[in-house]
Image 1 (cartoon, one colour):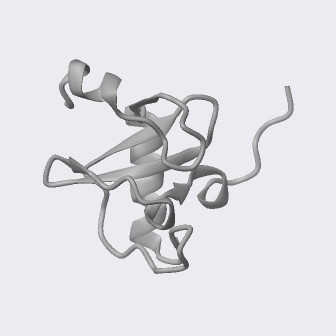
Image 2 (cartoon, rainbow, N blue to C red; image 1 turned 120 degrees about the vertical axis):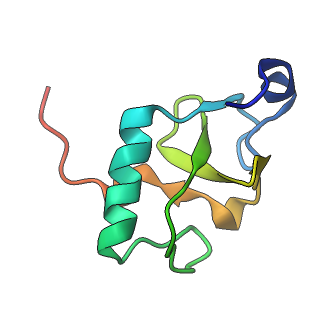
Length: 91
C-alpha cells in the first residue's frame, strides 16, 4: 500500500485529478487480461508482466502502474481499464 500522505500529493499528469489505489478487483481483472496478452499502454507498448499495484485518477478508468513501490506517472504508461475489459452490463 502507498502511504496516504504521499498519495495526497500525487495527481494524474493528464487531468490533474487526485489519485487513489486501484481496487483489488480491477487489478485482478487487469492482470488476468495481461496474462492472456494483447494489453497495451497508452503509449502503444505491450504490457507483458503483471502489475503489482496501480493508481487510478478519480472518475477515470485508467491505471498508472506502481513498479517496486514507485508510481510511474507518465501518460504513455497508463493502461486503460475499459480497453481490457469486456462489455459492461447495462444498468
